[in-house]
Length: 303
Image (tube, rainbow, N blue to C red; front, side, top):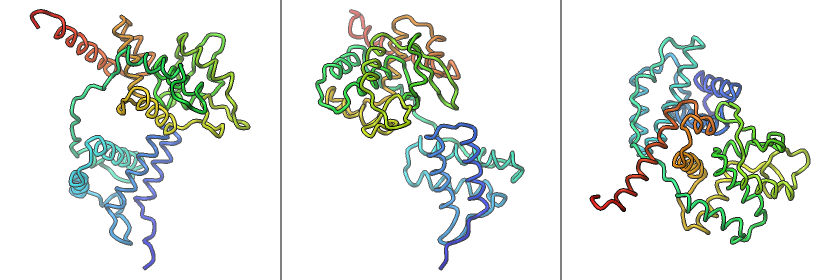
Protein backbone atom coordinates (compact mmCIF):
# COMPACT_ATOMS: atom_id res chain seq x y z
CA UNK A 1 0.00 0.00 0.00
CA UNK A 2 1.48 3.40 -0.96
CA UNK A 3 2.19 5.89 1.85
CA UNK A 4 -0.42 8.51 2.61
CA UNK A 5 0.07 11.89 0.93
CA UNK A 6 1.33 14.77 3.04
CA UNK A 7 -1.54 16.22 5.04
CA UNK A 8 -2.59 19.85 5.28
CA UNK A 9 -1.66 19.77 8.96
CA UNK A 10 1.84 18.48 8.16
CA UNK A 11 2.33 21.36 5.71
CA UNK A 12 1.29 23.88 8.34
CA UNK A 13 3.64 22.27 10.88
CA UNK A 14 6.51 22.78 8.43
CA UNK A 15 5.31 26.35 7.77
CA UNK A 16 5.39 27.20 11.50
CA UNK A 17 8.81 25.62 12.03
CA UNK A 18 10.15 27.66 9.11
CA UNK A 19 8.72 30.83 10.68
CA UNK A 20 10.48 30.01 13.98
CA UNK A 21 13.76 29.70 12.12
CA UNK A 22 13.18 33.07 10.45
CA UNK A 23 12.49 34.59 13.88
CA UNK A 24 15.88 33.30 15.12
CA UNK A 25 14.49 30.78 17.59
CA UNK A 26 17.30 28.67 19.01
CA UNK A 27 18.32 25.58 17.07
CA UNK A 28 17.61 23.53 20.20
CA UNK A 29 14.01 24.79 20.39
CA UNK A 30 13.41 24.27 16.67
CA UNK A 31 14.79 20.74 16.80
CA UNK A 32 12.64 19.76 19.78
CA UNK A 33 9.45 21.36 18.44
CA UNK A 34 9.93 19.67 15.07
CA UNK A 35 10.24 16.27 16.80
CA UNK A 36 7.21 17.02 19.02
CA UNK A 37 5.05 17.95 16.03
CA UNK A 38 6.16 14.83 14.14
CA UNK A 39 4.93 12.76 17.09
CA UNK A 40 1.69 14.77 17.21
CA UNK A 41 1.10 14.05 13.51
CA UNK A 42 1.87 10.36 14.03
CA UNK A 43 -0.72 10.18 16.82
CA UNK A 44 -3.43 11.84 14.72
CA UNK A 45 -2.79 9.73 11.62
CA UNK A 46 -3.45 6.01 11.43
CA UNK A 47 -1.28 3.63 9.40
CA UNK A 48 -0.95 5.02 5.86
CA UNK A 49 -3.55 7.67 6.64
CA UNK A 50 -3.12 11.42 6.69
CA UNK A 51 -3.79 13.48 9.80
CA UNK A 52 -7.10 15.38 9.81
CA UNK A 53 -7.08 18.98 8.58
CA UNK A 54 -6.56 21.65 11.27
CA UNK A 55 -10.23 22.77 11.23
CA UNK A 56 -11.35 19.25 12.25
CA UNK A 57 -9.13 19.05 15.35
CA UNK A 58 -11.41 19.80 18.29
CA UNK A 59 -10.79 20.04 22.07
CA UNK A 60 -11.85 16.42 22.61
CA UNK A 61 -9.25 15.09 20.18
CA UNK A 62 -6.58 17.26 21.76
CA UNK A 63 -7.52 16.00 25.25
CA UNK A 64 -7.24 12.41 23.99
CA UNK A 65 -3.76 13.20 22.66
CA UNK A 66 -2.75 14.75 25.99
CA UNK A 67 -4.12 11.74 27.88
CA UNK A 68 -2.02 9.47 25.67
CA UNK A 69 1.10 11.42 26.65
CA UNK A 70 0.28 10.84 30.31
CA UNK A 71 -0.31 7.13 29.66
CA UNK A 72 3.23 6.93 28.27
CA UNK A 73 4.52 8.08 31.69
CA UNK A 74 6.52 10.87 30.11
CA UNK A 75 8.25 13.38 32.34
CA UNK A 76 6.13 16.44 33.10
CA UNK A 77 8.75 18.64 31.51
CA UNK A 78 8.45 16.66 28.25
CA UNK A 79 4.65 16.88 28.26
CA UNK A 80 4.81 20.63 28.92
CA UNK A 81 7.18 21.11 25.98
CA UNK A 82 5.04 19.03 23.61
CA UNK A 83 1.97 20.96 24.72
CA UNK A 84 3.83 24.22 24.13
CA UNK A 85 4.71 23.08 20.62
CA UNK A 86 1.10 22.26 19.76
CA UNK A 87 -0.17 25.50 21.30
CA UNK A 88 2.37 27.43 19.29
CA UNK A 89 1.30 25.64 16.12
CA UNK A 90 -2.37 26.47 16.64
CA UNK A 91 -1.57 30.06 17.56
CA UNK A 92 0.21 30.24 14.19
CA UNK A 93 -2.86 28.75 12.50
CA UNK A 94 -5.07 31.40 14.12
CA UNK A 95 -2.76 34.18 12.88
CA UNK A 96 -2.83 32.70 9.37
CA UNK A 97 -6.64 32.49 9.39
CA UNK A 98 -6.68 28.69 9.07
CA UNK A 99 -8.64 28.19 12.32
CA UNK A 100 -10.60 30.67 14.40
CA UNK A 101 -9.79 29.38 17.92
CA UNK A 102 -6.68 27.93 19.53
CA UNK A 103 -8.29 24.91 21.20
CA UNK A 104 -4.91 23.82 22.58
CA UNK A 105 -5.12 26.71 25.07
CA UNK A 106 -7.94 24.83 26.83
CA UNK A 107 -5.61 21.97 27.79
CA UNK A 108 -4.32 21.92 31.36
CA UNK A 109 -0.55 22.27 31.69
CA UNK A 110 1.00 19.72 34.09
CA UNK A 111 2.50 21.50 37.08
CA UNK A 112 6.19 21.09 37.67
CA UNK A 113 7.44 20.24 41.17
CA UNK A 114 9.16 23.24 42.73
CA UNK A 115 12.78 22.19 42.77
CA UNK A 116 15.73 24.47 43.20
CA UNK A 117 18.70 23.70 40.96
CA UNK A 118 21.67 21.95 42.53
CA UNK A 119 24.56 24.38 42.85
CA UNK A 120 28.19 23.42 43.60
CA UNK A 121 29.83 25.45 46.35
CA UNK A 122 32.62 27.92 45.64
CA UNK A 123 35.13 25.44 47.01
CA UNK A 124 33.79 22.57 44.86
CA UNK A 125 33.77 24.72 41.73
CA UNK A 126 37.25 26.13 42.27
CA UNK A 127 38.68 22.73 43.18
CA UNK A 128 37.36 21.22 39.94
CA UNK A 129 38.65 24.05 37.76
CA UNK A 130 42.03 24.03 39.54
CA UNK A 131 42.31 20.28 38.90
CA UNK A 132 41.60 20.85 35.20
CA UNK A 133 44.24 23.61 35.09
CA UNK A 134 46.75 21.27 36.76
CA UNK A 135 46.32 18.76 33.94
CA UNK A 136 45.16 15.95 36.20
CA UNK A 137 43.26 14.41 33.29
CA UNK A 138 45.21 13.73 30.12
CA UNK A 139 43.31 15.25 27.20
CA UNK A 140 44.11 16.20 23.57
CA UNK A 141 43.09 19.88 23.97
CA UNK A 142 43.48 20.78 27.66
CA UNK A 143 43.64 24.52 26.92
CA UNK A 144 40.23 24.41 25.24
CA UNK A 145 38.74 22.37 28.06
CA UNK A 146 39.99 24.79 30.70
CA UNK A 147 38.66 27.78 28.71
CA UNK A 148 35.29 26.00 28.46
CA UNK A 149 34.97 25.66 32.23
CA UNK A 150 36.41 29.08 33.04
CA UNK A 151 34.06 30.88 30.65
CA UNK A 152 30.95 28.97 31.74
CA UNK A 153 31.62 29.72 35.41
CA UNK A 154 33.42 33.05 35.06
CA UNK A 155 30.83 34.57 32.72
CA UNK A 156 27.66 32.67 33.67
CA UNK A 157 26.97 31.64 30.08
CA UNK A 158 24.49 29.12 28.77
CA UNK A 159 26.37 26.35 26.97
CA UNK A 160 24.53 27.21 23.73
CA UNK A 161 25.73 30.81 24.08
CA UNK A 162 29.34 29.77 24.62
CA UNK A 163 29.59 27.38 21.69
CA UNK A 164 27.93 30.05 19.51
CA UNK A 165 30.69 32.60 20.17
CA UNK A 166 33.07 33.39 17.29
CA UNK A 167 36.51 34.97 17.54
CA UNK A 168 35.02 38.24 16.24
CA UNK A 169 32.84 38.34 19.37
CA UNK A 170 35.90 38.63 21.63
CA UNK A 171 36.95 42.20 22.49
CA UNK A 172 40.66 41.72 23.15
CA UNK A 173 41.17 45.32 24.26
CA UNK A 174 38.28 45.63 26.73
CA UNK A 175 38.11 41.93 27.69
CA UNK A 176 34.42 41.54 26.91
CA UNK A 177 32.44 38.89 25.06
CA UNK A 178 29.52 39.60 22.76
CA UNK A 179 26.98 36.91 23.62
CA UNK A 180 23.84 35.97 21.70
CA UNK A 181 21.19 34.63 24.07
CA UNK A 182 17.67 33.41 23.53
CA UNK A 183 16.01 34.79 20.40
CA UNK A 184 19.51 35.97 19.42
CA UNK A 185 19.31 38.85 21.88
CA UNK A 186 22.82 40.27 22.27
CA UNK A 187 24.54 41.33 25.47
CA UNK A 188 28.10 42.11 26.52
CA UNK A 189 29.65 40.08 29.32
CA UNK A 190 32.91 40.96 31.10
CA UNK A 191 35.53 38.21 31.30
CA UNK A 192 37.23 37.90 34.72
CA UNK A 193 41.01 37.59 35.01
CA UNK A 194 41.22 33.82 35.47
CA UNK A 195 38.90 33.12 32.54
CA UNK A 196 40.74 35.63 30.35
CA UNK A 197 44.10 33.95 31.07
CA UNK A 198 42.60 30.57 30.12
CA UNK A 199 41.12 32.12 26.96
CA UNK A 200 44.49 33.58 25.93
CA UNK A 201 46.21 30.21 26.42
CA UNK A 202 43.59 28.56 24.25
CA UNK A 203 43.82 31.20 21.51
CA UNK A 204 47.59 30.68 21.40
CA UNK A 205 47.16 27.01 20.38
CA UNK A 206 43.79 27.18 18.58
CA UNK A 207 44.05 25.56 15.14
CA UNK A 208 40.82 26.11 13.17
CA UNK A 209 39.87 24.40 9.94
CA UNK A 210 39.86 26.61 6.87
CA UNK A 211 37.34 29.44 7.25
CA UNK A 212 36.21 28.39 10.75
CA UNK A 213 35.49 31.38 13.02
CA UNK A 214 34.24 29.54 16.12
CA UNK A 215 35.99 30.33 19.38
CA UNK A 216 35.82 26.77 20.73
CA UNK A 217 36.71 23.96 18.36
CA UNK A 218 36.35 20.20 18.22
CA UNK A 219 39.15 17.80 17.25
CA UNK A 220 38.46 18.45 13.54
CA UNK A 221 38.97 22.20 13.92
CA UNK A 222 35.25 22.90 13.54
CA UNK A 223 32.82 24.59 15.93
CA UNK A 224 32.34 22.65 19.15
CA UNK A 225 28.70 21.61 19.46
CA UNK A 226 26.38 21.89 22.44
CA UNK A 227 26.49 18.11 22.83
CA UNK A 228 30.27 18.04 22.57
CA UNK A 229 30.61 20.64 25.33
CA UNK A 230 28.23 18.71 27.59
CA UNK A 231 30.24 15.52 27.07
CA UNK A 232 33.48 17.28 28.03
CA UNK A 233 31.94 18.67 31.22
CA UNK A 234 30.47 15.32 32.20
CA UNK A 235 33.83 13.61 31.61
CA UNK A 236 35.70 16.00 33.89
CA UNK A 237 32.96 16.08 36.52
CA UNK A 238 32.96 12.30 36.88
CA UNK A 239 36.73 11.81 36.57
CA UNK A 240 37.88 14.65 38.84
CA UNK A 241 34.93 15.35 41.14
CA UNK A 242 33.01 12.07 41.12
CA UNK A 243 29.86 14.06 40.32
CA UNK A 244 27.70 12.67 37.53
CA UNK A 245 25.05 15.35 38.14
CA UNK A 246 27.22 18.34 37.21
CA UNK A 247 26.16 19.88 33.89
CA UNK A 248 26.81 23.19 32.11
CA UNK A 249 23.86 24.94 33.75
CA UNK A 250 25.23 23.99 37.18
CA UNK A 251 28.11 26.37 36.50
CA UNK A 252 25.70 29.12 35.41
CA UNK A 253 23.71 28.61 38.62
CA UNK A 254 26.95 28.69 40.61
CA UNK A 255 27.97 31.95 38.92
CA UNK A 256 24.73 33.69 39.88
CA UNK A 257 24.51 32.25 43.39
CA UNK A 258 28.12 33.03 44.27
CA UNK A 259 27.75 36.60 42.97
CA UNK A 260 24.62 37.07 45.07
CA UNK A 261 26.33 35.64 48.16
CA UNK A 262 29.14 38.16 47.64
CA UNK A 263 26.65 41.04 47.66
CA UNK A 264 26.10 41.67 43.96
CA UNK A 265 22.93 43.55 42.99
CA UNK A 266 20.12 41.34 41.69
CA UNK A 267 19.47 43.68 38.75
CA UNK A 268 23.12 43.51 37.73
CA UNK A 269 23.01 39.71 37.87
CA UNK A 270 19.88 39.79 35.70
CA UNK A 271 21.75 41.79 33.05
CA UNK A 272 24.81 39.53 33.20
CA UNK A 273 22.71 36.39 32.81
CA UNK A 274 20.57 37.84 30.05
CA UNK A 275 17.29 37.12 31.85
CA UNK A 276 14.30 38.90 30.34
CA UNK A 277 12.48 38.90 33.68
CA UNK A 278 13.79 39.68 37.15
CA UNK A 279 11.55 36.92 38.55
CA UNK A 280 13.76 34.35 36.81
CA UNK A 281 16.83 35.77 38.54
CA UNK A 282 15.09 35.96 41.92
CA UNK A 283 15.17 32.19 42.38
CA UNK A 284 18.82 32.60 43.29
CA UNK A 285 17.76 34.54 46.38
CA UNK A 286 15.99 31.38 47.51
CA UNK A 287 19.16 29.38 46.90
CA UNK A 288 21.16 31.81 49.02
CA UNK A 289 18.53 31.74 51.75
CA UNK A 290 18.77 27.96 51.84
CA UNK A 291 22.56 28.25 52.24
CA UNK A 292 22.08 30.62 55.17
CA UNK A 293 19.59 28.25 56.81
CA UNK A 294 22.02 25.35 56.51
CA UNK A 295 24.74 27.45 58.18
CA UNK A 296 22.27 28.38 60.93
CA UNK A 297 21.29 24.76 61.50
CA UNK A 298 24.93 23.72 61.75
CA UNK A 299 26.12 26.62 63.89
CA UNK A 300 23.46 28.14 66.11
CA UNK A 301 23.24 26.63 69.61
CA UNK A 302 19.43 26.81 69.55
CA UNK A 303 19.01 25.42 66.03
